[in-house]
Length: 302
Image (cartoon, rainbow, N blue to C red):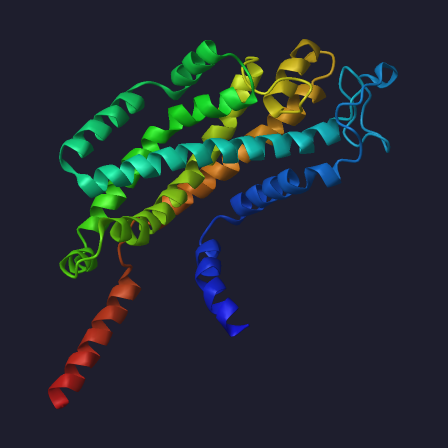
């Protein structure tokens, strides 16, 4: 038990510094996305035109849409769809970016120059343009959307991975391993790759909100997740013709998407700010001076 607490204490200490509203929002989003198939009270795809456009009731907590489908069930299943989509996009993008970034940081020289020029080209083109180009060539669909967004997202992971890899390769313990005759495979897979993955995953948190918005955008345009699969962007485009007569159908998925994006962006910004050294306050400076003075006095007495 003590060993588990020692492992959890650093994580809990970091979480205490994060905005609680963002943690609650993201925690709710992840919980709904994970357990949505068991939490949905009704079949999200079941249509009943006799119940179309109903308001909130005991049978339908958030009402029904224009086809009589339960809005609450569709919203939480859409959370599951978005969670899986964002995880797939970031997973593929981080895998490509970390592999190429660490290879560039390890080898340097012409390998580094070549891979970083490819990264620069990817960063110079807007991600939505790359996604639309890939979907235009391959055709719309779920996995096409994941591939398109991953190809648009990996250059940033590659750039960050390369910077972290260069920093790790310049540390003394890597030089010591080389002097001791450690193989390149051991240095790469045993030290460089594990050290890079943790740092890049921290920055991936900030990209989760943007990725969720990109998934919803492509679905809104009809190029991503296809009906009848519930997805917030798809729900928005389906409800647009009923904006004036029943704005609830537009506001609910829009609100869910907005809260998820704000939560991830706020958490990502907080993580980035916590990694920046903060100036010492007057109280902390006085405490440090007192500690130095006490240490100096003890050494002089000795």
